[in-house]
Length: 316
Image (tube, rainbow, N blue to C red; front, top):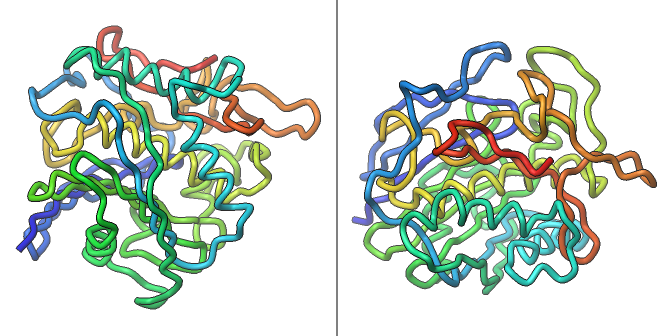
């Protein structure tokens, strides 16, 4: 039986990790709802550090499984984001998604080797509603295993806004996991627009808890998809720096904080619980962003924790 390791993360409205046992060899890391105002930031006695295990480097093949109904516009926002994660940024002006991605190399992967990391978009599959509108965590892992992603690669399982996933919204917005037997990893992110935008699409929606500051306008005009990008970015950072549970993480191995989840809710300078920080505004649309991407796209990238300085590094 395949052993699957899962690391869940709520990346926008923030959660605290607690470990629960599961059957079928799985080791999920469950997240409880974070209440704004809690002291959830790293400190000197609880450092994020390297645990001498594997990381993902070089050309990383990425497969996508679209589960449910995604419009062509929604797909293009996500695909352009993945194309933005490259050392050849196609004329992206700084601050850029490529610059954000290179920060992960600088702060984490360069400490392991000098090999640069680059996403290589591969196969895409469309699983409409083959297993219905509700999926369990184990089914997500099964779907990922069917993608045929090569060793060292990542499978993205993306679910549409009418698809519920076990504990989605009640305790998490996304998670990443791995299959040690094949050397592959996977990420699940759900579209929360119709289910829990106040939890999983913040800061593009009024928060469910905490300070009720006005939401930001999403840079691509889609609250659910722009929220997915924030969560996907955080999961990608965690996956490449801690793919198998023995790379870079903070705290208990069974309930780790990783490269981006160690900086919950931080997107720009001056961030504090309920306030995303100083970011840029598109003067034509009024939308908020902090990174330029491929094909003229704009995105909001989460802060990356700097292990050396013990601070949250932002693009602006």
